[in-house]
Length: 302
Ligand SMILES: Nc1ncnc2c1ncn2[C@@H]1O[C@H](COP(=O)(O)OP(=O)(O)OP(=O)(O)O)[C@@H](O)[C@H]1O
Image (cartoon, rainbow, N blue to C red):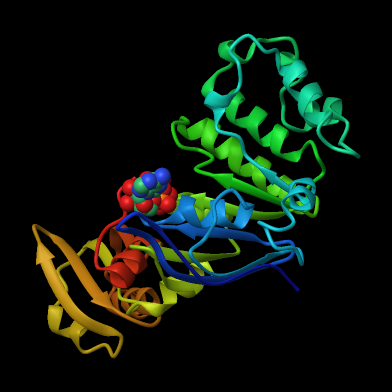
């Protein structure tokens, strides 16, 4: 069942069209990503979903509510990750959680959240003294303290080191597994690929595709490359004759075979039949990065 429905959303800031026409639905219990480059309109879109911005056009329904008209009720059902700069430096972790709990009629026990988010050791630490990863985890805890049905996480792991980023991803998956629907804004391809059940690729205020990460990858021409160093010389012609192969090139003893289908199997079987061993064998497949370039005509820098 769709828990979020956005139809033909449009929003301008003066002459600047931030969101041109955005439509998508988020199913209950999924992690739905909004992926796009800086300035694509991601934050504006989710701020309209949160009821924090007034759209110029379009309709939005969140858990059956209108985000503007039913803002107070929506606030109880939707947890929004806070921009970290909004918390006072001297506020201790437990004080922040206690304060936020007081905003909700039936809050989660923040002591449990501290444990779940691996922050029990930081309970009495002032916000300003937390590491970047700990601040992020606290911001997620604050988004969850009201027991929301939906959590909106915007650029969750920006600025985190790779380990803290992976820890945060594990955390987001655990939150989803506890039954919370997650709307995740990101410009990190790896994050989208790892976490999202489905995602909307947004570019210049428009949705260019909605699919699972694997579905997006399969939309682009699925060329693969197999690279190896043959133990014995092998005639390129033999490789070219394989139905799966579209191109063969050699560079300094290394052979690069491009093709489709079960290319790896076709190439390695041919080599085995000719008693050739492939050393330094590597396969490169189409990635979400490639799919993004194909869909938008440009690379997503991160
Ligand atoms: N309050 C505002 N006033 C004027 N222009 C704005 C405002 N907020 C955003 N914009 C512009 O609208 C466009 C979309 O911005 P938005 O923040 O929604 O994009 P985004 O995809 O979230 O980008 P980022 O990842 O950089 O936050 C950008 O060109 C931005 O400069």
